Image 1 (cartoon, rainbow, N blue to C red):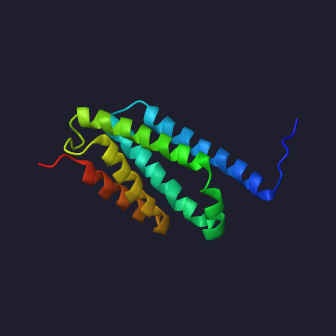
Image 2 (image 1 turned 60 degrees about the vertical axis):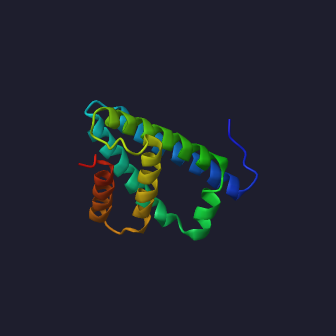
Image 3 (image 1 turned 60 degrees about the horizontal axis):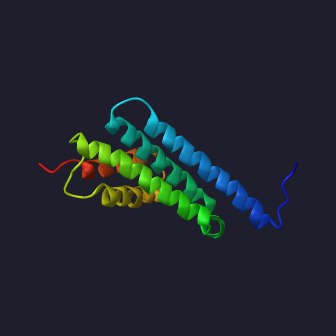
Length: 140
């Protein structure tokens, strides 16, 4: 049975929804793997940063079409909740600062790492992830 699409925009939107679902599944897999919460958090944030870097290649007009649907808002909410959970684990372990709520820290991470889209090298993306993680550490 084939799916019928009314126009090209619908085809692209369906493809994009599949891409987002794949990214969320990949990030969830990294967050659910065995290991210390800090390692899982770092793996998730690094992969998210690389996804943002790759996303930059969509181009302005196409990106505007792809990122205006409800599926994007739902995915962002899901991602924020997921990262907040990883951060809460880290707060309990004493590895992440407790003077800022995990919800605020999740927003900080996502906004900071969105800057990966403007970076041209993997090394630069990794440096941004390292700086973002440093901002999460307890203040001593």
